Amino acid sequence: MSSIETPARDEAETLRAFIALSFDPAVRSALARAGRDLQREPWAEEVRWVPSESLHLTLRFLGDIAVSGVPGLLEALSTRMRSVEPFSCSLSGLALFPSPARPRVVAALVTQAQQLGSLAAIVEQVEEAVVAAGYRAETRHFRAHITLGRFRRGKRRGLEIGAELSEVSLAVNDVVLFRSTLGPSGARYTELGRAPLAVRPNS
Image (cartoon, rainbow, N blue to C red; front, top):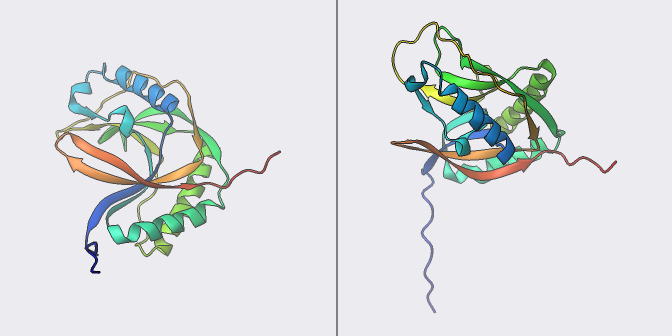
């Protein structure tokens, strides 16, 4: 009896990917409220606002990667994340990023030094996993922020933010590998897999 074989996946097929922290509904709701306040700013019409369901904190942008490499990358991430203890951090500031003089995005920030250190530690483990999976090392400096909106093209100088962000607590229990699909209305993000952090022993 003959059988029909499934065609092999093209090894050259690629997807656009990044590794990030995702948010629970309470965090998304709080950031959405901040976004609505920001949309009252005089410059708000110059910004394309990110839908609440797409909000995330990027740990490592990968760009185009081979589809065939996704399982190995997830395995490397899972191995590294087992050595990282879960932690919490607070989103407590709003900023024009990377600077008010030449802003590209409106962002929510983690501002406490200890929490920034915890995020830097998890980024270091993510980077080691990425390199172990065969990808090039990152040369850019990590700056923890959540993009709430992106400025459209045009000259922008001397802008200020009048809105404030009530402190939002973010529990970090895993990292997520996302696929980014670009479209006319913006990017759409699809979860490809999660790498849980270490499980705390029962006290």
